[in-house]
Image 1 (tube, one colour):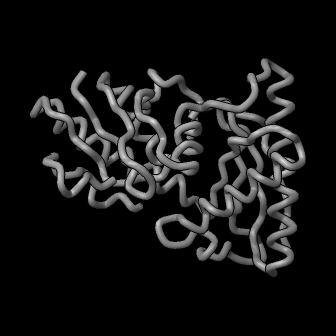
Image 2 (cartoon, one colour):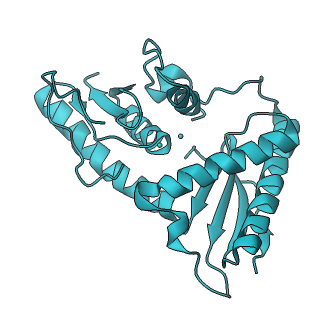
Length: 233
């Protein structure tokens, strides 16, 4: 029903809220944005002083910072570890598709300092878009389950990134567009500009874009209203 394919590791960057209604704040930019990082706090724009208010927030903060529970390995050891994560994840997802009698192939890669796994359309048929779900919520849950399966097999916390039917690639483009609008607004007004709520993956994309533009960004709020604020340099 499903086939697993592997690609050679490729280097690359990682691939992700409403303001308090009682507080005066500028309107969020990016109404088109629907409601995860290998950088340091300073590089990602993460607000290190903000204390997570829930277990979910703490996990998301760790993803944005690129923090792991164990020191990272270097060179070939790290590559071998990421390849192992991809293999475990692919086997888990392949069994899941077979059990659910769903079409889709499994594509395994390495993206920066993460294993990257995608469920893509196969010759037998298209990947059911319900595996993405509204606002990507099913995809986020499936990614968490896959990470848990990898951790159970390897004994180490995984920051594996899962995509289904190119959903994350499409979201990346939308987030970049919205973030650039916010950057232009901050440069023109000199005032902080908040974006709409985003997933940890989308917040990472926004942080990277702001950093590349020479400005500053930080994450504020708690899930599901956690969002990025673009600040003047």
